[in-house]
Image (cartoon, rainbow, N blue to C red; front, side, top):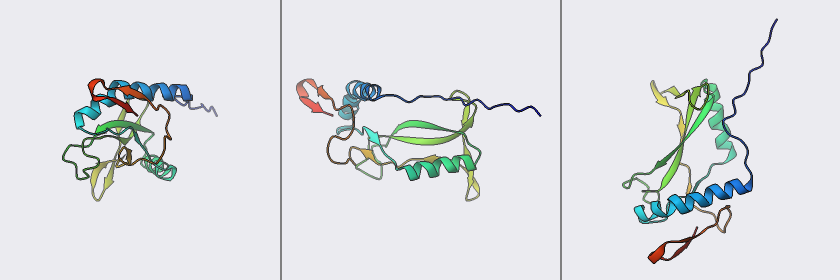
Length: 152
């Protein structure tokens, strides 16, 4: 009997603190300031979920034959039902099935007799739902010209 070993196609890799800090600082300087000015309040910088939620989502993906997750950037509409979140950016995780990051499809499952996408959202974003203190890397001082300085 001949067995073949399945090669794992890893799309990303582990990164160090310097990489994290660089990505966050670049985002804050090149996107966050403009986003915040556009929506008229500080835009969100992070979304959070606990490990139990993540594991449950991954297990549902596996149960339904999926093998990936697409993390989609999004924004709540200005007239969103939760006014704290209205206009702010967020992320939505969409279950996928496919061979790699370029060749995959959204995963649909039967829910209450109809096909529906397997996705996870409504994650608490910061701001407005932030802990206390400076707990994330990338604290940045941004010169907003005549609008002053922001520490983000």
